[in-house]
Image (cartoon, rainbow, N blue to C red; front, top):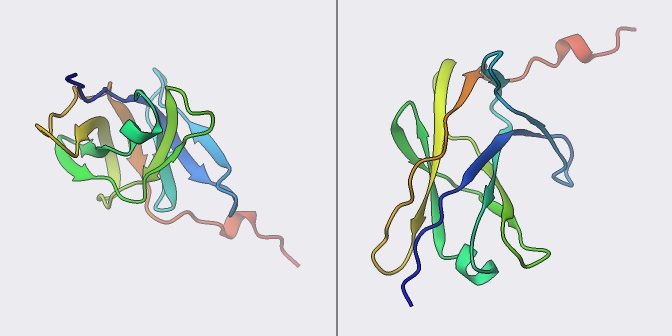
Length: 137
């Protein structure tokens, strides 16, 4: 049976809010791009026949058309049914406005790549400034 790389559906950019990997996600909308920071993760819904096939993919994030293989990809495989919720660290990018698109590539066989997702527009702002949230004594 021939299987094809399933295209991902880009969900949002997620910020890690605790060591339990709880996410606060923001979507870009018609009102404009969302701000993202170094510690943020990108999240998406990934179709796969099951968790075994999910592990047979690598994920490419296109930043302004330039491909970056995502590292530290985490997918929730419980329950073992599609679509699976996945996330990964954002690659390095210069500060400013960027267009992100995601694709899936097979790791075995013909190594086909899916179509790119719809674009997510972001403003990469570097390191999050937490000084405003500190309590003054």
